[in-house]
Amino acid sequence: MSLERQLAASGPKTGMLTKPTLPTNGGLPTNGGTYQAHGSEHHGPHLSPWPLVLSAGVTMTLLGLFFGAGILILGLVTFIASLVGWGWEDLKERFHVTIEALGETWPFQRIENHTLAIWTFVFGEIGLFGPLFMAYFFVRANSAITGFLWPLPGQLHSITIGAVNTVLLFTSGLTMSLALIAARRGEQQALKYSLLATFILAFLFMVIKGFEWSELFAEGITFGTDIAASLYFVITGVHGAHIIAGLIALVYLITKAFKGGFTPQKHVGVEVFAIYWGMVDAMWMFIFPLFYLV
Image (cartoon, rainbow, N blue to C red):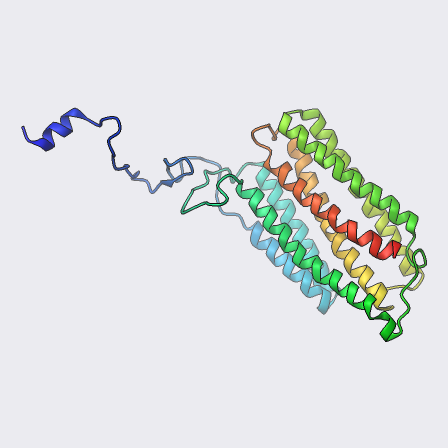
């Protein structure tokens, strides 16, 4: 008997290197080193139009800041609709497919894809808020040269209202942290109540901020009044837009929590939003003292 026939008859031995057999249905290797066939999970279509719609909404919103309220409103509506549609489809679990591991993952092999994505987003937001704060510091540093008199603390913005909003927003950060702890422990009731508390506190923050803006408009202080007013409306407006986006995301999280969609092993949505909400709180740590206290 030839050597090839003897090896074939004996079968695979322990420790022998064998060549993996590729599936015939076009599968690819997954994180565990095995092959997962395409189409083996039936969760509906894998493609979604909402990321593209969201990008279009953001683009129109930014263009609307320069070309008129019509484009701005259309962009905001498109942006909000994309978030609602995306969340609704996720609640239906349309996109739960095996993540295919292609190429080297170092140094992120122990980091969830969603966690890495939200941290990348946070650093991008630093690139958004950073120039706005730098513009503020540039104007303040040169106010003596230009002769512009910056408003004194409490002259333009109520310190009391700003302090109340600070307490509300920072408390919402605490309740969001409690929601994450509850999700990790599998405490469903605590998760629901913490998410609801976060939503209520953030909503109250926006109500007070809207009242604050309306009071300024009633006094004739608008975007074009002076550089101090322009910086205030732009920076607090961008921050407020992030809170509105967070409120929409919280509606999705609360709905999923009440459906029992989060477990100790499956709560990435809560963790991602907790990171995002921490960034929103951190930005307010700069906004409050810069416009209300100094």
